[in-house]
Length: 619
Image 1 (cartoon, rainbow, N blue to C red):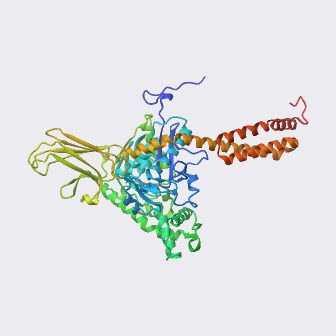
Image 2: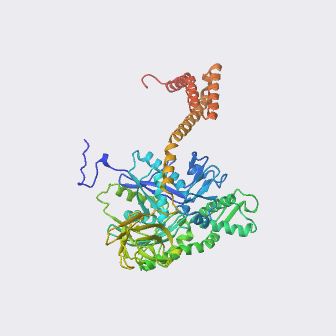
Image 3: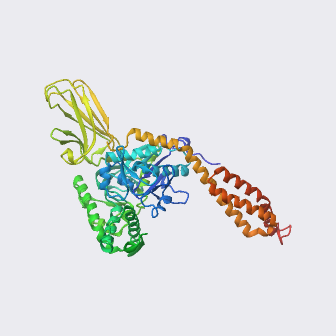
C-alpha cells in the first residue's frame, strides 16, 4: 500500500490548489516559455521538441498569421512581410523607430508606430502579442491546466513606455502579467538558485536586439540588484549590420540597397555570424544576384568588426560599476546571457575586462526563461520549504518633474530598489495661483528637452495664496513591474490629483480594446481555419496510409475493387484543393468505407503469415 506524504503546514498546497504560472522570455530573435514542474524549472517544447520559438510573424492576411519557424521559412521570399527583430520598436514613436534603422515600411497608427506589410498594417505590440499567444498555447498544451498568469522578462534598460507596451502585448495575447522581470535579474535567479552562489555577480546579457548589464548582490537568499545599465539599441542585429556594411564597402561600394535586399543580406549575415562560433570561415548564399550573391567572412574579420560594438557594451558596464561603487576585483563571477554571447570574441573580451572566465554552464538562450519560471511559480503561491528567497530589483532610469526654466527635478534616481515610493514638496510660482501643471519625465539629463516625456496632468483647487506659500507634496510610486504612479496633494486643503503613467506614444485603451475585440471577433473564423487544417492533415495521412497498403498488398484486390479505391482516393485529392472542411470529411469517410474489406484481407494475410508452420502446442 502506498504511503501518503504530509507536508509542513503552509509549505505545500493541496494538488488541486496548485496554481500554474509560466515564465516567458520574449526575445528579439527567439522567445521561450518555461514552468516549474515537479519542483524543477524547465523550458517547454513544442510538438516538434523545439524549445526556441523564432520571434517571427508573417501576415498572409490580417487574420491568417504564421508564427515562428513557419514564418521564418518565408523570410527569403517575403523579406518585408516577415517581421523579425520588432522588439526594438516596442514602445517607440515613429520618429524613434525611423532612427532604429529597421528595414521595414513604417507609418503612424494612432499614437504608435506601425509596420506596413503587403496584407496588413500592424504595431510592434500586435506582433509581440502573436508570439506571446503562441507561447501561451504551447504552455497550456504542455501543462494541461489553466494559467493563473505569467512573469515576462524585459531588458533591464527598457523604459516605462517599453514596459507598458510589453504589458499591452500580454493583454492582447490573453495573459495575466504577474510581474515584468528584468532579464539579467531572471538569469541571476537561475544561476543563484541552481549553484548556491553568494557575493556580487555581474550579468552580461547580449541578445539579438538589446544589451543589458546588471550587478547583483546575492546573500542568503536575497537577490539585490545594486546597479543596472545597458543599451536597447545594441545586440546581435548590430553585429549583422556591421557585417553587411563591410561587405558593401568591399564588394559593391556603389550599390544602394532597397529594403528587401537589405533584409536578405542581414539574414545571411546572421547565419554567417552564428556559423563562425564553431568554424574559422563561413560562406552564405544571400539570394541576391551579382557581387552580393554570397557573403564570406573569417572569424578574424568578425572579431575586427565586433570591436567597436563590444566596447560600447563595456562602456555601459563601466558606468554601472561606477554607479554601484564596485571594483572589478570585487566581482565573484560574470554570468553570460543571450545568444550573441556565444561569439568567442565576446566571451574573450568580457573575460579580459573582468579578469576571470565568464560563467557559461547554463544555456544562454534558456537561462532567462528558467529564472522567470521560478519567479512565476513563487508569485503563484507555490513556495516550498527550500525557496526562501527575496528579489529586490531596481529602476533603470531616473524619474522627475519639470520645474521652471525647463529643468528637471529628480524624484527617484536610477538604480533605486523597487518597489519604491518617494515624495518631494513643491510650491506655487505666482501669487493667487490655484492650479499647477505637472510634467513627468524620465532620463539622466538636467534639461527637460533632453529627457523623455512620460505624462502630464494638472492639480486644480489650490487655495489662493502668495507665491511660495502653498505646499504641494508630489509622490512617485514604482511597483514591482517598474511602472509608475504619480500623486500630487496640496497639504492645506487636501485637494489631490494623480495619474498612472501611460506613455503618449503607446497604445491607447481604445486601441487595446479594439485589438482584444478583434481577437474575439476572429475566434470563430480562427476555429474554422483550424478545423480545415486539421482535416487536411488527416486526409493527407489517410492517402499516404492507403497508398502504402496498396504498394504492399494490392494483389489482394480484384480489378473492380482497386478501381473503386483509386476513385475514392482521387476524390479525396480533389477535396483537398477545395478548402471545404465538410467535403474533405465526406471524401475521407467514403475512402475509409471503401477500404474496409481491403483492411480485413490484409489482416487475414498477416494472421496466416504468423500461424504458418506453427503447431497448436507452440501457440
